[in-house]
Length: 172
Image (cartoon, rainbow, N blue to C red; front, side):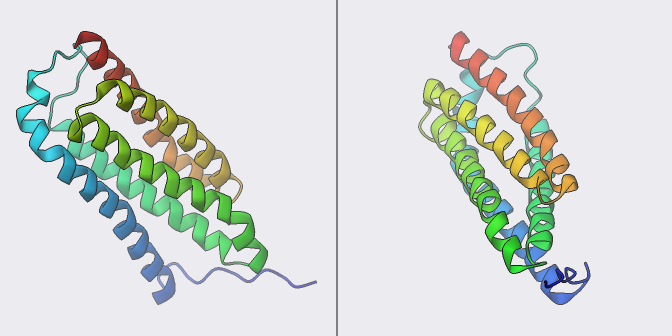
């Protein structure tokens, strides 16, 4: 029986490289979403009726920056556990697939809501994102409890964003 190896030290070059890749992936998706969002946020979004609990515009980039950073650290933590043994990669693959899917759905919401101005489909897509994110949290928990916990604020913000999307759809 082979004993699982320890992950590389946190500050080793391989570990820091994967952390950097995690940030690049997450903030790459964030950048794509921002590219789709930036114009409509200035021209279309202000014309929409919004509920009283809509946060000020400045809150969104602050919150999303924090959430994407938490996502990057979270997936890195799962990677650190996965490299401990060959079985770890096979066991972690569903978690990584779910993580990628939730990133794609995250961008999809921006595309639907802001890019295509399709509020109803964006709401349906957001519900799917919440479900996939919940599955990602459960899958990450099998590898790193901290990685799963780091995604909980994202799920909570997503739940709020779902309510906000519903209200904007209803009011418009």
